[in-house]
Every structure is written in C-alpha cells, then in structure tokens.
Image 1 (cartoon, rainbow, N blue to C red):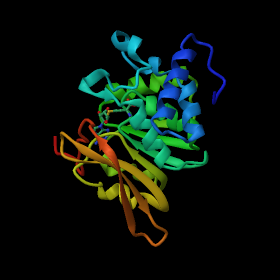
Image 2: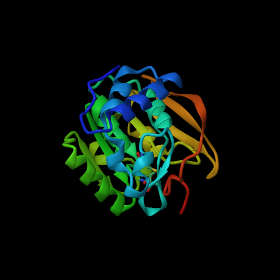
Image 3: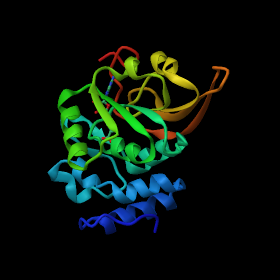
Length: 220
Ligand code: SAH
C-alpha cells in the first residue's frame, strides 16, 4: 500500500495497477502514489472505460492513444523528480500523464498539437482540481520558449531524433525521456544534460509510440 486511495469505486483497480507496475520494476514511491490516486478512467473515452486500469495503451480521440501505464511510469521515474521541478511534456493527449506529472513535480507545461485533445485534457484536469499545469496548443518539437528552461522534459510521441530546441530548453543537469526511432518502432531513451552541457544518452527499453509530428519530428 503506497497511498490512501481516492474513494470513487475504482481505488481497488488502481491498487492492482500499482502492484502490476511494482512487479514490472517501478520503484519510485511518488510515481506509484500518483498511479494510486489519479483516476485514469476519467481520461479515456466511455467505450474503453472498463479497461482503464489495465496496463495497456488505449485509443483516445483524434486517432491518438493514451500510452501504457508502465511506459509512462517508467518514463517519469527516469526523470528523477523530487517534487519541485518545472517539467515540459510534449504530447499531452488525454492529459493523464500530465496529471501524474502534476503530482510528482512542481509544475507542468503540457504541449499538444491537436486543439480538441488539449481542450479535453484541460477539462479533465480542471474537473480534478489539478492547478499546477498549463496545457498549451502548438508544435512541441519547438519546446515552449517563453517558459523555458525546464528541469525535465518528457516526450510522449516517437521522434526520429532528439529535437534540438528541446535540448536547448533543458537546464544543465536536467533530464529528458524521449522515444527515438522510426514511425514503427523506437527505443525509449534518457538524455541527461551534464552540468558542462554535454549530453549523456541511455537506452531504456523498446517501445511503440504514435509519431511526433512537427518541425523537429516527423514531417506530417
Ligand atoms: N501522454 C498522452 C499520450 C498521448 S499520445 C496521454 O497520457 O494520453 C501522443 C500525443 O502527442 C498525441 O496526442 C499527439 O497529438 C501529440 N503530438 C504529436 N506530435 C506533437 C507535437 N509536435 N507537439 C505536441 N503534441 C504532439
């Protein structure tokens, strides 16, 4: 047991998901606590709500997907957050990962290119009373210059390589997690910007994300 469950009838399912993720190697207690408390069923379409607490990706609007919880938990764990950081999320989608980040970081700037998804994410986050996030519409491969630099950056869509503006907008000492590869298969990698500005890249696992479409991603 890592958190007081939220009394909404789904707490038992969330707890099972927490145990599944622990069994798959997620150790960061703040991340597990976020999974135990954020109601994922509020971020998925009605038609797949009964599957909200499976450890699987699910379809959301606009042909996009809410990623597998294990991938999201692993990505956030690798950012090594302490609760104070300013985080940039590229690809807000449903807003679920944004809500997880909001619980384990200081504040979150979440960029989404599809306006309807940004609206839906904002609405779900508002309804849950999540205050420390800004969901903005735009091409997240450009980062979000007016609020940069960031302590951590998480990219939730597949990129051919690490977008240069994101490297620029990461603070020295900062961490980024991004899936790098082709449209069909990628490696999730952690990119650490060392205090002297050099990059250290560590592959984490094989993943499959929807494409990052934009100036420094795949050209849609
Ligand atoms: N983290 C999301 C998963 C979203 S899937 C969740 O928890 O639901 C990836 C998202 O990235 C999609 O919503 C897609 O529209 C968005 N996306 C793709 N290219 C983008 C870009 N250049 N800038 C911002 N968002 C982008």
